[in-house]
Length: 256
Image 1 (cartoon, helix red, strand yellow):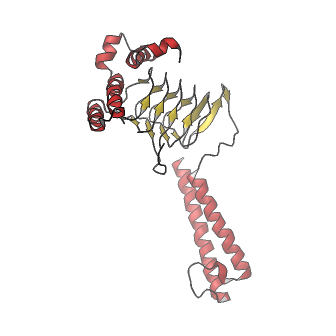
Image 2 (image 1 turned 30 degrees about the horizontal axis):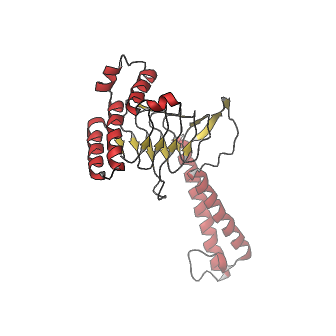
Image 3 (image 1 turned 60 degrees about the vertical axis):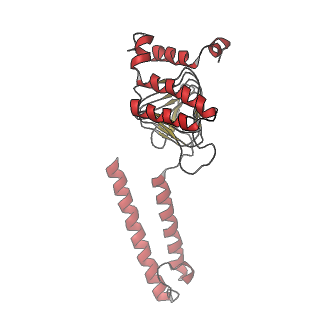
């Protein structure tokens, strides 16, 4: 941020951001009195000040009033730089430990939230010049690097490198430094693949057990140590697991 920008108030920067980013904006007077996203940020500046100066109950009252008036839920502890624009805004949720840099554009339905698994810093950090499109969910103590874009409806659970475009569920980098990314190990969780891997692992163990007829691998019967009974139980388990995998594959194809 330049020295000139530091001298400006955050509210003035928010007004200018709305003028710059919304082609429908005609003047700052209109933005100040009619834009819900601007109103939410304006009220948050006061709530944040009270929160940091010990008046947390008053800060939360202001935030609750903002949510009723605008449909935008911003925790008063969230750290938001100047020059942020929330466009349309209804359904936006910004959690307690969120940090947002300058020149950030946020569309309706965006959640900057937690996963429920973390303590302390639980919410994302959004660096400068980021755009987060409608309905996107950015979850956990991750960082979205500067100059990045998050596609509509994406669910982002891992750090996003600077100068990237992320789309999908789970979110995947499809552009990096203006170059399309076709094949990259992004190490993002895929619950369907993880479930298939778990089932295949069980089948492999059961098949090994069937070969040696060992009660070590028996699952459903305590008396499966008997070779014949153990083998029967294991065979039934394999058939059941393979049937479960086939059902999951059919469901996956039908969802697509």
